[in-house]
Length: 266
Image (cartoon, rainbow, N blue to C red):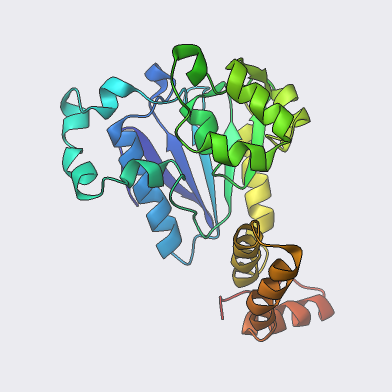
């Protein structure tokens, strides 16, 4: 399993846990961290034994955004990864889930700071859990910058536009409770328990048919910009083949026999 000095990857059963591991900088994004994220997404996509991914941060924070000095390759750690960025100039956007959507469900477990680039990465995840003490926000305009990680496009599609514009234009911090109220996160749990809740949700997903789970996720995103008529037609194209799989038959048998299903991605 991959990983770098700023990103750890480990398995919890069928769940891959990616931990942004630069606590001294509140997990600000560096080249080693971005390369580790990219490699983690690619590995999860390629490994059929991975059924879900949890993204979290070490040291009580999720991610405080971009570390411009580290991204520029200042110092030994950053410099050693310059070739990766040269080989794929889009690597950082894929790492931040701007230009890549993992086929497995991604659950964010947020504690502490999840601001600027952290909130932008969050928008690329599917399910979001926050500790009560978490802080969210897009601070870029306060510094005369632009939230170029996708927020002006994605945020108004994920939460009501009035809330998206307030977050984007004021650059103010949001508590976990307010983030949940406007729909940015789905769960608020006691501080320090976000990862446990995320893993609980991951286990519920892992117990389901993986072909069905991946098809459902793909359908939700692929039809998002279609008309209802177009989306319903596309849903049938993607959904009907699932009924012909061995996993679908196993699900029906397991239900009838009152036992857990044993899915084999067939």
